[in-house]
Image (cartoon, rainbow, N blue to C red):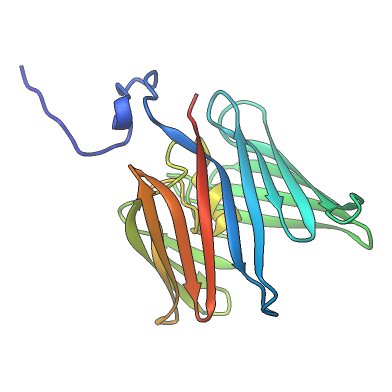
Length: 247
């Protein structure tokens, strides 16, 4: 009889028995609260993002509560783990009036993902189509505006944008906060451009054409990120993470 063990946490961390039935202490991000000083020095600005999941740990709702509006993203699925529609609605904070609706249709064809956005706002309506190219791991490798490369942990290593600007990521030892969510890699990259990865580690710094422009540091509670501090020049933003247990 041969036995072995591994430090790889994919499927076995925190009490999971590897068959998908033992979630143990696995957690999903439920809310990320942000604060940063106002540019006019009048105090701190605050906003948050909130996330909801179904019993398959798929992302079904993502809410942004900003300074001017509440934006709700609803993810609709047919079969499988990839959304086929995203309904985005924005409502003004001041009086609750409608600001815009964006109905996003998603079509999967081989290694291409075709995204059609139907935007209807107070002052304008428009339709746009974007084609994403993904690899065998469903990671975004070409967005039409940039080319993405990855390291061995599955994290973005570089993005070369269409204006030839190169963005390079370096990483911390804090594990990705969405690692137990059932969310496609390309979707997280399309929404967050690598700042909240679903695998690997959280970014520690970002370079643009070789010059470091952002530094990110973390505090942890066990294996989960509790706070993130993002410093870019004179800008300092603090994020606080909340979690729910994975179902």
